[in-house]
Length: 99
Image (cartoon, rainbow, N blue to C red; front, side, top):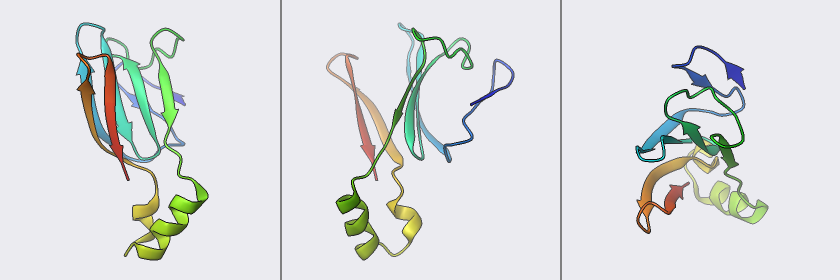
């Protein structure tokens, strides 16, 4: 992880950041990306303390990856990547759709 100014977040192990979702009551910013979903503290996105930072890797099983590679027109489409984020259950859960 690279710590920059309070207004910049970067993880060198992750590709493009694609989706944003904010929970203003909790001060949480959820960021969907190529390979992971992050929960950041909305007021300082570089604070990686245990109470405000979570990183969940998106991982394909071998069979899922093999199936994708056999049908996809472009191999890059087979990398796990967040496509959509939405709150469910009165902000208690997040629905994550990924490739």
